[in-house]
Image (tube, rainbow, N blue to C red):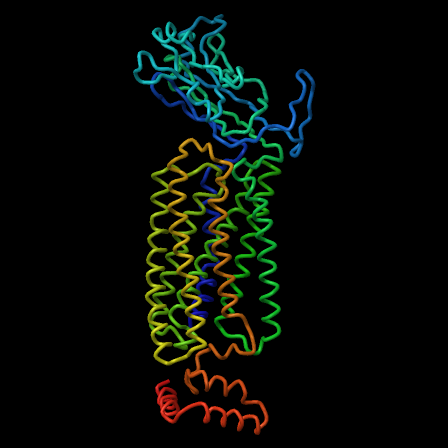
Length: 525
């Protein structure tokens, strides 16, 4: 049966979180604390650079007075980028090219700028290719200093973009930036780059870390609203679970196998949302993403999505309504479920475990494509099966079940249309915002899919809620599918006189041809 198949799938997947944890162990952990482990500088135009991170940061509620010690806490209202043990390493050959007592034998610059001020970094001589470093021609045109990054002060704040200089001394192989905090006065998407314009420093590396903090904690600005969202969704799932369990307990004798699966999906959804909240709360308080917890939550999420899709597919095939089992289709449904689970968990582990940055475009396409193709195949299979089920119910004139399935098909159609429309919006959102300047509204992209899944689950719970009449939309291989026979089965425990009255009413309200059709239909069943 479909539910048995789903239960078997859940059992088979219980060992897979271990695999997910093993996968995550071999991934570098990144977070609001960006770690640089001898990251090499790469050549870009006439400069050598390393990207130090890019995050949305809200403005500080206040700025501490200068030259006064300030002991910050997680929720102190400050926003800053703190540099800790930032060290630049050059080769011995590069160091030996300078005198031993040279005061400045190599310059490295740290550039911090808001996305809106990106054009204030670099210049273009005579309208040609844009350069980051000041050349002889640009020094005459821009008034910049040759061998340094071109910086034009922002119209809003002359101190931004922020530039920090670090110099090598003599023949030292390393140069270090003292611990420093750069306070954020304006809300925006901030970018950090380590840049060198000295060709002699080719092959240089950087180590250390930077800590990016928002007023309410270390959670990145574009992720911060999601913690509140998951708190609200947790309450919504708890209410849904409470209402469902109340109905479940009241009518436990009439519970159908199909409703066991719905209970499992509600439980998985509640666990997923709760774990997401704790994942974000830990991230916000420490600045590091908990690898183990994130691995579990994406595993639960992949399981929930897989079981949900198999449940919808099983309902569309008419399990428990038109057929008692899926028969030969059980193996195919299971194989599809396992394949979808593997594709989903691989994408989620890569995208969420230990990282806050978006996956590179090509890598993301390779991971998203199998997941999207499987979803498209599932949708096609679901609607094909649903069409056949509706035809069978219409032929059997099962009005109660037909009405339920029509409502279900309408809900599915609305869900698919909303999904397609939202995917189009998401593509537009990302295509028109290459520099993430709309980062404050980016959380809605993620939240929409959770809201849509929750809405469809509520519809399924409403249509197939446990009740005294549950057997009216349950498969019956003895009495047939006709609504009149279902009504009779519901009244089978009433006094004999009542049954006779019901039969008399049926005889008065039905002609002989209908009764013959009902008898023949019961035989076919």
